[in-house]
Image 1 (cartoon, rainbow, N blue to C red):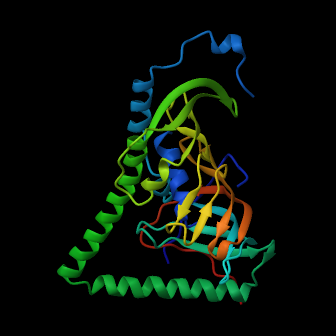
Image 2: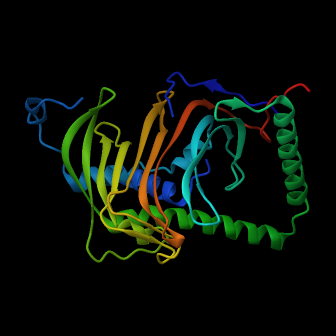
Length: 311
C-alpha cells in the first residue's frame, strides 16, 4: 500500500461529516469570512466595506476542500433523535479523519467512544472493511463505460455547483459591514456585522434559512481569512415545514478557525446550542461541541493507508 507522508501540525488546538446546520455555519464563515484599546481602535479608520469584502471573497476556499489536504482528529458530541422525536446528546466519539479527493468518500475512522478506545480487533475489522470498499470502488471505476463516466462527472459537477450556490447565497442574503477591530490569539481582526437583507432571493436549499439568522464574523485584517463566526436565530426556524422540528429564536451557532502549519486556516471547533420542539411537540435543549485538532498534512499517490493493528 502507498504510504501517507504526514507532517505533524506545529500548532495543536483543541477541538465529520458536516451535517446541514454545520454546513450552513461553515458557508457563512467562509463567505463573511482581548480587545484593542479604544485609543488603538481610533488610531486608524476601518477599511472600506466594499473593498474589504471583495478581498475576503477573492480569498475564499471551501473548508471541505482545504481539509482534504490533511488528516486530523475530530471529537464530536452526537445529537440523536429517537423514533418518538426525543432530541438529546448521545455519546462523544473520537475519529481519525482521512479525507478523500472524491466527495462523500472521506473515511472517518472511529477510535474511541466516551474516551473508551476501540479494541484492536474492532479497529482491524473496520479498517479491512474500508480497504475492501476502496478495492471494490477501484474495480468499478476501471470497468466504467464512457457513459457511466460522463454521468459520474455530471453528478460531481452538480455537487460543486450546489456548494458554490450556498456561498453565493450568503452574499445575496447578507449585508456584511465592518464595525470594529479586535484581537484573536494576538492577530488583528476586523469585526463584520452579518445582517440579512430584506427580500433577498436565494438558489440553494440551505439559503432559505439564511435570512433567519444574524451575527458577527471576525476576519483577519492582514490576510482576509475568517477566524471566528457567531450566529443567532433571529426568529423560529422551521425544519421540514415545522413537521420535523422548530428551532427557537435565540439558538446559537458558532465556529472557530486556526492557522495551521503557518499556511492555511482550518476549523478548530464548532458549537451548536439549540432549543426548540421536535415532532410530537417534544421540547429539547442541546449544546453540542465538535473539535478538530492534530492536523497533519499528507500526500497520497494512489490511496489512503494506515497501519492495521496487529491481531
